[in-house]
Length: 188
Image 1 (cartoon, one colour):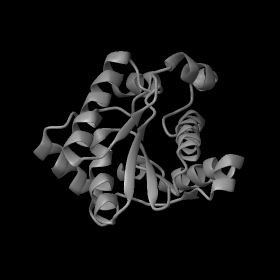
Image 2 (cartoon, helix red, strand yellow):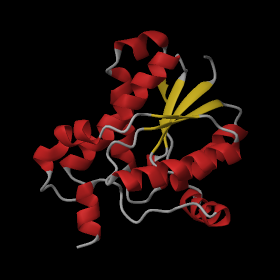
Image 3 (cartoon, helix red, strand yellow):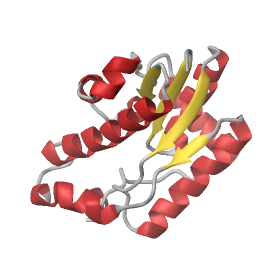
Image 4 (cartoon, one colour):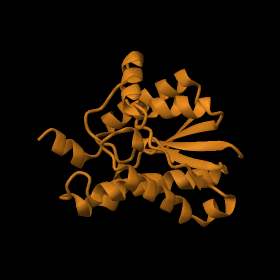
């Protein structure tokens, strides 16, 4: 689909600005929610419901990937003692972006981007590198011409805009990244 963009969505608050800006740019936009990294399942459900509310309100379709936390834990549990922002987080981000790239290739969209750069807590350079690598590593994506659309949504007051929109809409805003390890650090 020419001019179609699949937007990997980490959470509803971080999707507010990208949804509105990409829609205003004229993209045929679809959201993609990975979510298997989120713990516990009740938290996953809460975040998924907030995203679906936002998507309906903004008129943007969203694909919600099945919740498979065991698969995610198997991938990262050997890095349980890593600090926040360390290797475990990079592996988690790579898994999310790889899944989104696979979905983008399956759908035949022209671009892939992510909401991860809305938050000032994410390393935008790392996210950019991992997104580009996810697309480049998939033969199907490369052959279809899927491109990585590198955006840093927090620029130009993007993060402040997301806070304002989140508050206006009454969206659930989580207080930890999502995984059991980040939850443990937050509540320590």
